[in-house]
Amino acid sequence: MEQLNFLGGELLRYNKKAKFLFFDFETEGLNMVMSRPWELSYLVGSIEKGIHMESENFLYYKDLYMPNIIRELCHFDDDRYNKNAQDPRKVLLEFNNIIEQCDFICGHNILRFDSGIYINSCKREGVKTIDFSKKIIDTLPLLKASPGKLNIKKKPDENLLDFQIRVNNIQHKAKGYATLNALCKDTDVEYEISKAHRGIYDININWEAFKKLLFKIEI
Image (cartoon, rainbow, N blue to C red; front, side):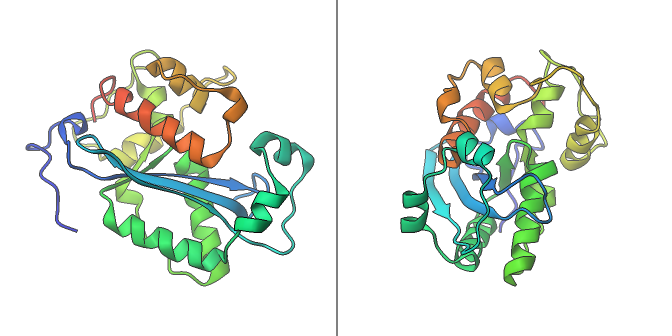
């Protein structure tokens, strides 16, 4: 992909044409190695044109294991899943195609969770992974670093990935300090808890909050 001109290295908030891919996996559990994703939702947007496309995908596993707590948390619907679930390999290949078309790969808590689910799912299905580490934007560490939270600034010689990892490694004892709900409260985006953990809903909310977060943090 052609390298974007970031106005001489200025802030992302001014880059109207960059394509941001937001994605979210919903999984059987929280084990990044063993838990399989049953849903992958993503959207592509730019500041200039808004949302370009969005896609909600269910990944089919004959022996899918869904504990009751996950079913309730994620509003899992057996009929909807069985009707719409596809071959996981097909879903991942299509996702890879979208990754290659985008300038930034984004989401909430993707550094610690969703990127690992992506890598292990691809390995499981025999799909070549794409290294998008240099394009990752994780709104969880960005929220933690914002002025209303820990107020941590990116160092002049620090790349964006290293900055996010550094912030992620700073522990905070307050429960819910950097959840998607906390991000929405911090950016004045309405978040309906009753719809939480529905992938397609979460990424749309994440996108709206991210656009406002760009004006709170210098990246």
